Length: 342
Image: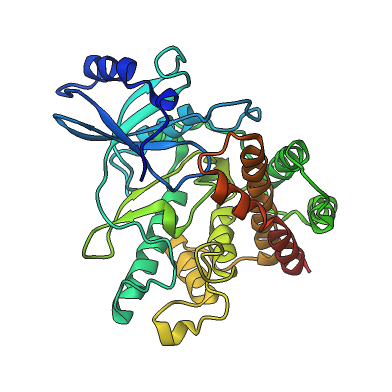
């Protein structure tokens, strides 16, 4: 973590705002910026009364409908008390006159953030429990009735992939910085492969992966699922495919995948085992044409990373160096998407 630029938080305005809206909170406030998170800058705030976490929209010109911190706040507030663990939502500021952008404040959830799916910091016999907990949280999320938690209007019902392919194709074109032939081909071919069951609708996270979760310091319990910016009402298999997509990337800090790893030897589940456990928990027999769902996941992530790269080039990225490195992976995601589709 590092000290934020003063114009990102304006602590002289933020401190009295927090004291007026969060019972018991006392300044003065200090802040450090989390290095992770490429979309919405996130900060750890410390005051005399304890620690909080703040997420804000990034500075600069933004793509339409992107960086919706108000949606993040709403969905996590709605999920309080469910089987999906989330931080406590404390306050939302929709005005820009406090720190210069919309933001929200939530509780600080302590625990482990595991960003390498090989789980090198965990003993081999215990690794499977972490993945099983990840599977449990995903199935629990998709089992929630949106109407029961006040989210029946959180997104249009049905036709999820049709809407998403259209949206991310436009987002990709608006942030394009060079030609990527495989992305062009995915944009052409995905619409013709959409599943017949595109009417399935549930609450989806939109960026479900290991490093968006906080686990207990000494066990496999998930304490919080984070980064809900892409959440909506959509097709459940999009989240599941996003998990498998991540594992098919190279190992290391950039790919954060499991490519080439002997999973049985390392105490990790195969793709098929993870999918089978998910289907068992959801009470479904299996998934037809999972290749489409996987191709869509690669395509959408490629479009997202292209946006990250564009913000880095424009000087608006949360972490410019990492933004450029992630943007360089767009051709790899596009190539993998085509392989999955074929």
